[in-house]
Image (cartoon, rainbow, N blue to C red; front, side):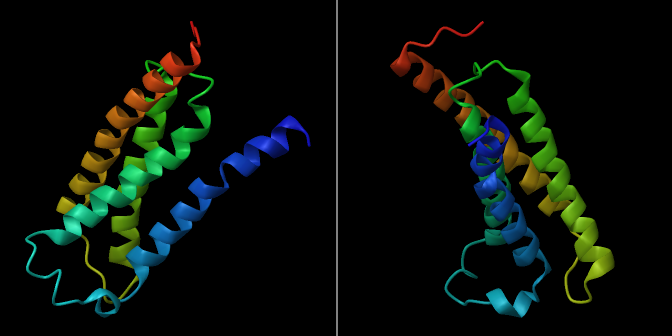
Length: 136
């Protein structure tokens, strides 16, 4: 298998996660109504943070062996995930009839991506310590 095909395979989880996010954020909200989670204040913000934090995770994980935790690639993945979250709010506003635009969802998306950035930095450091990898 060529190197390019291998890289494509490594990013299938990130691609599938992005598709899942798209589907979840464009389905009618009645699909997710559950009384048991409605007692948790701002539960949807927690979900948004988790979705976009996981996006950074799935994008960055294949690179843990190759890049140091100070690499700018993690920053780019964080920015890209945050922008995807912001774009999804506009998709909800203009392309769905039963979903609402919410600036606080954008904030939650960005916070989730940033928290994941720091988690991935830690994972990169731990992996490199474990494997004794010296990366410039």
